[in-house]
Length: 480
DNA sequence: TTTTGAGTTGTTCGA
DNA sequence: GTCGAACAACTCAAA
Image (cartoon, rainbow, N blue to C red; front, side, top):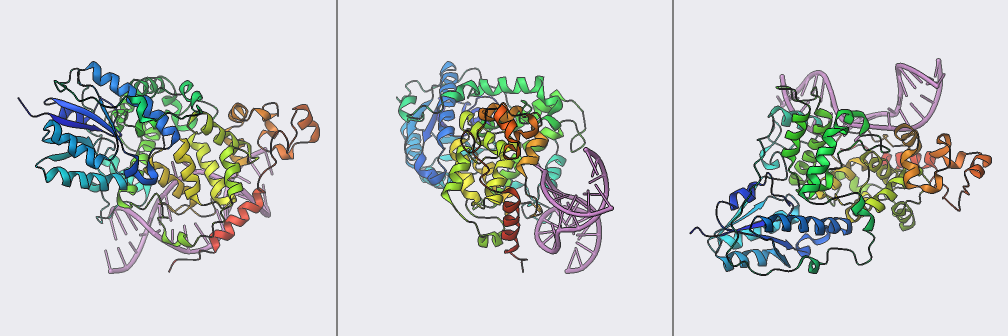
């Protein structure tokens, strides 16, 4: 009989297209998940992500149990528990999907060493990305620093390999050890602020598949334009499923290619490109995080170390609570609080206000998103906040500052989105919805709105805030 | 090595 | 109301 192996689930909570699972399933296996908050330091999953993780583990556990290999749950330091468990069951190999977070890379390195010292092996599979960042570089051999050449070069390598099948039967250990009950991982919030999440999300592989089916049946056709309209369901909503690995990026890639068939055509001219390029932005974020492990903490452009941020807790708090007095920003932050997710267009507008008009450090915004997003992903969150702040990886002109009124009027013209999440403004006519402080008194009266009481006046004068941001950027001067 | 073309997502002003 | 230009120079990637 072959030696059993250990299958360590981390952020690949699926059975479909899971190379680590397929490798482990060649013989008897013990699937294990370890909740290891200590190793992650400040980047342990945030509150919303823990809610998701709880439900995703429940789904994965059920799927594994149905196939004969129940999921073994542990809590504690993986670098002790995993080698110990491998030894206890006599596993020669530990299979897992590769992680890209700096803390996780460091931990995997130590675990691989500990296992090797004992004659065992940690085998990591490519599973969370289309292309290993370590094996993809520009012509110069250096990592890419600009999205467009990165995306073009990646597309030029062709479609990724086809997804692997889902195993129907697994050989569990004859006498699997008793793990923790899911509830004892304590992932759900004490005070049930996440009660509303369940109306929006179905964590787990089946939920991911259902979301994909719905997306391909409708929104994909108009994705290029509709993805920017937060009032309609024009996006895929797959981000949390991708983050937790409930669907692999290459499965998604192939599903979208099959839904918009154009044999032989791949690249900016293909119909699938508007969506695929979003998937490639995710990929680019992983590329950046891999090559710049300080991405979550420090500006990629070193000169930004001198940027005159002006931290002010009251401003940050008003932004977090959706009380800035700028309707589309407040709608976004309230959507985030209620659903654990925020529309991508609104993320940019809200983030821009925080770092530019309000001059709050991007790290503060990133930390809030980390705690409140069900799709919080260290690569995407860090890269995106740096991009908005202007210290990230692109040559965006510094004067590109979003005006939340114009953005609201452009992308939420009828005000459907603002009305949904800022009900106190719901009765305002569209003409004034994105600028209530300019509405005539009679209009406010008719809408039953008392500015400053029912809804705040703007926390910042937009023209002044813009000028302040430009002045702050000007202090950086030109690099040597 | 040097050169060249190009770069996610915008706003404001004035004709 | 609509349109084009200005905003200012930097950095990257590839030829």
